[in-house]
Amino acid sequence: MVAIIKTGHSIQRSFYYNENKISQADAQCIMAANYPKDLSDLNQMQRLNMLLKTAALNENVKRNSVHISLNFDPSEKLSKDQLTEIAGVYMDKIGFKDQPFLVYEHYDAGHPHIHIVSVKIRPDGSRIETNNIGRNESEKARKQIEIDFGLVKAEAHKRQLFELKPVNVTKAQYGKSQTKQAISNVLNTVLNAYKYSSVAELNAVLKQFNVLADAGSKDSRINKNKGLVYRILDDKGQPVGVPIKASDFHFNPGLKYLGERFALNEIARQPHKARVKNAIDLALMGTSKPDLQGLASDLDKQGIKMVLRQNDSGIIYGITYVDHRSKSVFNGSSLGKQYSANAIQERCRPDLLSQTSKQEGQQEQANRKVNHEGEPFKNKDHITTFKTNSDSSYGQNEMLDSLLDPVKDDSPLPFGLRKKKKRRQKNISNGL
Image (cartoon, rainbow, N blue to C red; front, side):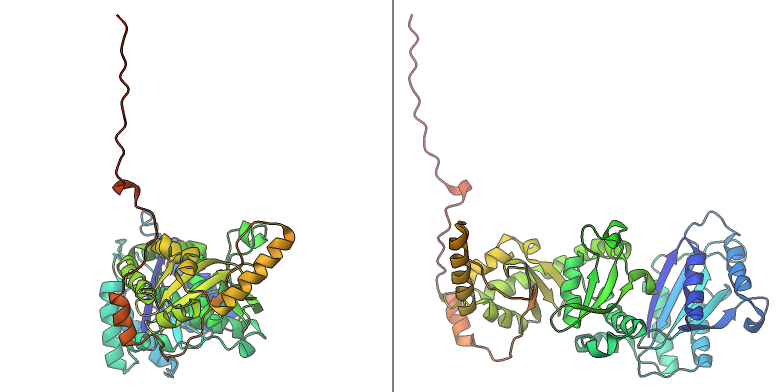
């Protein structure tokens, strides 16, 4: 079981998110705890008013709403009685036993899950402390519930992370509900597990599962409104099917949500930066340097996927490294200049495709009388994720030899180490 807790300023927003799911036949309210009437005797406004009146007991608390989702393994078939019992036990263990709360069963994802809406204000007007509730109370409750109810443990989900499969484009592109479910399955795994610090870095991961986070072009309506949609990609990397707004997902993974993740991830990924840099340096060390395809193959064996970004002319202008082992994502330049797209192409041995593209580029530029370098590694796709095989042409003996080989360095002597020339002083004689 995986528990996600979010607090907010608007009870109505959390409430109507779930109520709208009911109107769309994607959810059902299955429990109203600590209400004066049974669920069957409550209408929509009565369910909401109980929460609002409780929150009004302490108007000094601004973040007064609590929205929780409990997510279960797809193999688990839980009845409504089991779901309500789990919800009651969970709320008891995190300190919300006496709070009014509503439980909704949702049907809009590929796994069983429920949503719980409640308030942080007790009946006596005091505030329930929720700082670190996810790490402390919720984590203990989750583990105990997994044991008591025989549920699949959350750690099993982490072990299955690398088994996450790309979206089945054929099934997903024909309708909104199928598309949303397919995208939701990927987002639930990627957004919280990987450490990315920009939309581009996030897309380097999502595109490996045929999903794209799209903020729109510069002059588009979605970009002007600072919106975000998620789309499914076909085998050629082109968007297909119905785009889904970020606000349509229960956790609303829009730009505001991602911005908060960017700040946290920037700090969390720092300890893993050296591993990626060392893996690249080791692959490019010595005289037997690989070409781009070979570098991608060497990094792939270390659990690092190299993703190239290209323009319409096939020129590589960006490179991103996705470390699946530490779940950290780095744009090349964030690792240092020597790991940027231009530097990596210079450090690699040119391959046949690069040479051909370079000749074509030089010929084209000669025809246009433009003095530019040739185009490297031309490819129709704007993003290239290399496919690699497990056979290594860079064996252990060659690795040891490369470590002992001197590395030729034609770079000029750093400015700080240059020997300064002694300036000759002219004798100035003042006439008397």
